[in-house]
Length: 199
Image 1 (tube, rainbow, N blue to C red):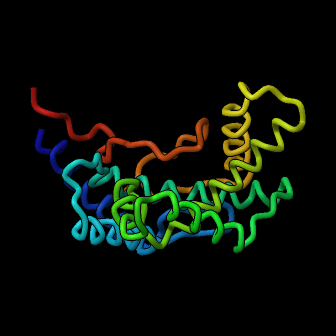
Image 2 (image 1 turned 180 degrees about the horizontal axis):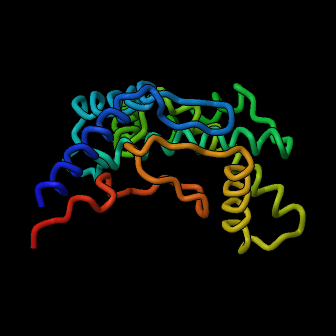
C-alpha cells in the first residue's frame, strides 16, 4: 500500500513537472506553447468578470483549458485544409464577417457577453471566423460537386481527421489525450489509474 502511495505521489510530481513545460500542442511543424493557450484561458476568465454570466452555461477548469487547446489544433488543421483545397479566405472576408456578426447583435456593446457565452476570447474572434468561413466554403464546394448534403458532416470530419493524421498532432498530457480517430483532445485520467477513488 505504501509503495503504491509513493508511486502515485511520484506520478503526480512527474505530471506536474510536465505541465510546467512550455510545450502545449503541436500540429505538424507548428507548436503552440502552454503560455499561449493559458493566455486565451486568462482572457476568457477576465472577460467573464465584466458581464452577467448568471444565465450562461460556461466551461470551467480543465474543460476550458482543453477547449482552448483544441481550438489551436482545429485552427491549424483548417488552415492546412484551405491550402490543400485552394480555399482562399482574405482578411477582408474575415472583417466583413465580423461586421455582419456584430450587426446581428442588438448593439455592438453586446459583443463581449456573446463572446463570453461562446467561451471565446476576443483575440480569437477573427481566427474563429476564418475557420467558420473555410468550413462554409468547403461545404459549398462539396454540394456544388453534386454530392448529397446529407454527407456534409462526414466529409468535413474526414478532411479534419485525415489532415490531422497527415500532419501529426502532439498534445501535452495536461490537456488530455489525443484521439486520432476523431481528431479531438479528450479528457483523460491524469493518474493513469494509479489513484483509485475510495468506495
